[in-house]
Length: 566
Image (cartoon, rainbow, N blue to C red; front, side, top):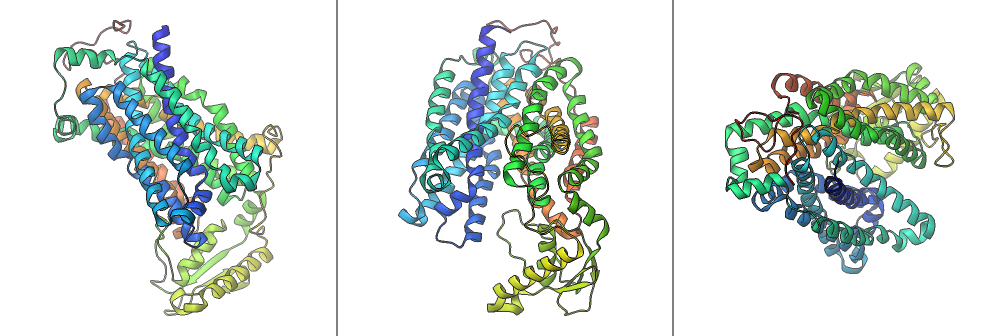
């Protein structure tokens, strides 16, 4: 690898790390942000709005892919991802100086959501630009290895944001951090922005784009050419359903759902849960580069599809083992103590709530949501029409309530139901709801106890699956599309696969858990899409590792030793 190539990889990867840092800051501080910018609402509502604003950043990513993908194919890769990082960094910095709702009222919330939308748009353009830029600088036969460094950036950006927050909290103390110190991580983004822009200004445009411009073969309308012509639109659909759909759900399951599962389902305390995930990421991040390198040898397709297949085959046993190790008391109770929900026909609904704004009011929905939140498996039986739902725990029976019937007494009815349900579950042998699991890490290096090591090992396996599907994906997508529409063509399927299929995973898995009473049933969501990707990928996705990005569409493939002129 030449000095120039190392500079290209470093500059592209560093800027993308900073972009992910900016993006994840909001998610890590969502509760605090809700209190600062939605203070006119009650705590539950303000948290809903804070999470909605976070979700908005994910939902607009495909639109950012369209806007900046088109720009990148028209004016160049370098200038476009300079624009994306300026938008991301500036938006994040403004959050750090934005007056709260106590100071300027509802305007604070409106401005905050607008900034989140800008961040999502910028992120939608950043990844495609960085991946395309690095791939078009890479020598033939090494694109998987070169672009795999881009794949580490989401993990490293998340890690950097958590480190900065932890360091700031430790130095300032919780009270000062909650008061005004939360702004510091956002304000630091201006320093990261300056470094990224300075480094990227030193770069030259990619050789493939320069060649295309010199020959006058660029696209005049990248969007319509990429998605309005069937020969190209077909490639985008194949990329989405045969690669990024499965890659997206495996990535979200291994890094985000795993954290949700051990923290919310298994009741591991937040500090320990984050440390467990952090150690699995530290141990597994090298896999991105390993599998990117390996994809240059054996191909992109077999590694990505094997990762999806292994994930689909092993998710159920791995998550059950995770429960057994992280919360043995809960695991034992789940196996031996029957819980039933008896409800009138039509009283139970599928609780799909991706925005967090839907309110379920029937007695059955309230009972099932409460059990799902407590990680209690249950079965459902039909009861007499018109009767309130009841929860049967062993020999105890707890009456639920209906919000429309309770009216002004809803708060009191909810408190009574929660208290009686908790008492019945504890008496039957379930661990108390407030009782954390026996896993507790006193400090970051408290990893050598057998139980902790086993849990980190399970999480490490999940991260390995992530690195298998994610390490080669940039090279695979870049190689599927011709230079004239590459930025546009690859960005949209990537961000739909990750932003939508992956982004809907938390809401869908909880709905499946609540609907079935099985804490593992939500795993069917990633499993079904991973299996679908394996089938579609095997049939339709071509192997692309030997394609020459400099060749015309019908020109012969050059030898792996070919290196573009600098």
